[in-house]
Image (tube, rainbow, N blue to C red; front, side, top):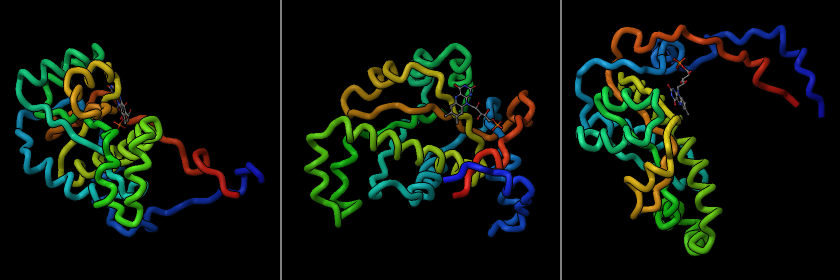
Length: 213
Ligand SMILES: Cc1cc2nc3c(=O)[nH]c(=O)nc-3n(C[C@H](O)[C@H](O)[C@H](O)COP(=O)(O)O)c2cc1C
């Protein structure tokens, strides 16, 4: 195996290789920013449901779909969530129109007979493998979290994902009875101005982030 990347260094990959127009590429990725400031405009349950209905079609291992959403909307619920966020993230939860706790369902395997009928027997096998289940749930729910962020953007909404939190504390606060494991909190709303004071940071180029063998 070679790890020599010099052949790729001179290559230029034109954006015209995309199957979507520049407007879509800008909306989903190039112009979209991680938002910390939102307008007071409401984000409805219907909007969030519509985004979920779109991104649930993204692929997961064995079609297990372990991502779960806790929609945090009421002032009382926001306070409960904010208490478990890191200092710098606390006010953002209190100020956002709505926050989503993205969680991995360690009991996802009970849906396998419906979601992967050709593998139905796996549901019973995984029942006795809690560590394997949690690992699968976390990996695939995180993949779905990426889909969700892009799906929110596709709906004209802005997302502010935050991992700085006491995940165990959130699990005790909200998920004591259902085995969900919190992964990320995402503030959602309509972006105010640029949505952030941070200048756009550089991204690694394809040649830095890939190898070809
Ligand atoms: C998994 C994940 C965890 C993050 N955690 C935090 C966080 O705890 N606090 C915060 O202010 N931003 C957090 N961010 C935001 C990132 O710093 C931001 O998305 C990144 O710098 C890119 O910013 P841009 O989209 O504006 O270019 C997180 C983002 C992701 C995807």
